[in-house]
Image (tube, rainbow, N blue to C red; front, side, top):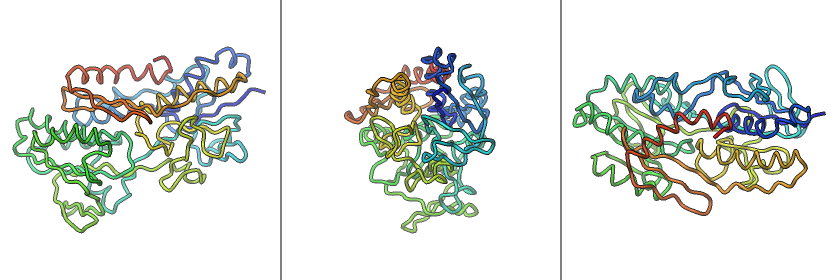
Length: 379
């Protein structure tokens, strides 16, 4: 009987793990010693950082979408099924269509914006964290000539730099349209600085002040009145808007929550070094699905996949699991529509934003194309 590796989730983390395993275990798979099954609840693979560029009409939506079967390695058993329950007690995953037994399980179910987390949010706010939201926001921004744009942020959320990026890009967008003087941009953040990472806050604050971007900290949204176009905070203050761009709190996947595997937000308690679900020796977690105190970002999934795949291959071949995830993350910080900064950091080293340049913006644009090689396990 083959060793069965089941991967739940066909996003960046799950696809990278599946393809890297297939590329490094071809002989074992062909000899029926290993079987890799990737469970996806959608036939589309979307490069989610592209949403930011869709919102400004810099790229068309289809540019960031591929069919899953075009990306999955031919030795990966790609199955479309909506997982309902994950049962580590019986080593089974229950989907709508079938039940899947495993020897080793990788949970890569991601994080998901909850537009119903605050009363009135889904009716009154726009977002760029979904494809539909980015397209709707694109059309609104194209027609917007004057008024107030309010950006609100709840935690936890993925792509931690994205709220800063869209704020700085909005400034540039309206300057290029020649209407920046008629557009008020206000950015808010729920703690006492404009980003959770102090070096990133220190990088962004001078840009806000130089460009006349208003900001308010300790801003915690409690309710949205879509008819009056008012955002109401926990302290009762009302803030008017013409466009409300909200980054809602994210949760873990419903299957994780329904299976009782997640914390209060639905994220799985995970060992920060070996990426195993706490209390389990045969369940691994990758990407946004973990509860690790690091950024929920595509690069996080990439670096975690390297560790996880190394250890799974060692395990299949009877070797010790020695790879350790260092907490490494790398993120671009778009400063406008034409230049950017970049940060890298890990458990031991804090981020230090690089000098902003058009070259880094170009590197980001290049990676937007190279991502597909990464997802295929080539890069």
